[in-house]
Length: 491
Image (tube, rainbow, N blue to C red):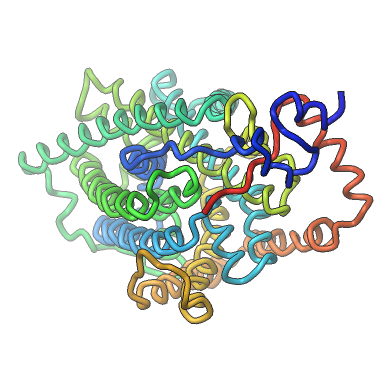
């Protein structure tokens, strides 16, 4: 059976993606199924995941004291809000899915957009997925190994199972993935509230000794602040997640900024209160020595109900991983649609109306990143790479204020905010290199620029021998997965 007959059977007309204007394939679009509540759940549910349960140790390690540690958490929240406001303007100005990708394409052209998709699809998004699932595995296995670290093989197997489960859920249905996200968002808010309320009760009872002379012994260095911000901002990462699914968001002009305005300040308040709660029962030294901070908190405060902490933390991380998978698959889908990735990655399942090949590729690459299982190293290099593109994208917003003055802007943030965010991005990229230079940062830059080796022959010049290789692969993927090219998105 050839590719053309498959498409005819499923309602298509031609073997080429351009045939999607026909009636049969016009239905092959991602539907607008994400409302305001689901949008807020996606932001809150994706941001509040593993970060607040693993990053406190790293932030404290790089600041040296409770006072500057809490300042870093607050500063990260402010940075997240400013970044999200910039992305709200971009998302309502360019209503395409794919996060930074369409904005870089509009502002600077195809090369920066391709390098972003190259780095994101191969490294940034899958490594983030792996970090979250490894965190889930650590907390899920912690109750079975009291007083010691779980074996690495157990953590890796649990993380692999989590990746496979989440990938399958997101392949099956957009609505199912949204329902899962809403459920786990409620679950994680329950455990956050339990920790916060417990901390407030302890503060009222007078457990304030760890907040006295809270800046004493702090170790403030340029590189240390940069690494502390990396870990804090990792916990806030997800403030731009709705920009990856703009085409599936109901009334994006209203719901995109509203979800940001309601969601991120809520997360910021939760993070500060959770950190304060940790320090009501643990000294800085005890927190640094804890294998799982939230579990240690539960053991000291909630005994004999301490088991609910690792259970709900596992729910929290799974919810975050589900949100990351839901949005990152759309980046691969959009990059494939624009011809910057293998074409079949932009195809949509006939039965499920999900970007099936894109989500599967995301899950497979994510599985590879659980092999090293070094969470802190993954976070540092992930953050270094991601802030290069955050800064470039927000710089694109500034550039388009002058080069594309006539574009419709339902939301327009004061120009000082994107300029300040660009400066913050430059600091976050340079500070760790200056403070603690490592060859790995250079390797990261070389990898990003190395995408040009693939861009010119495969994307820009479209050499014929490459087309001969990819065409049969595309055909077999269509037959195996029952997927077709998407219709043109209506703006």
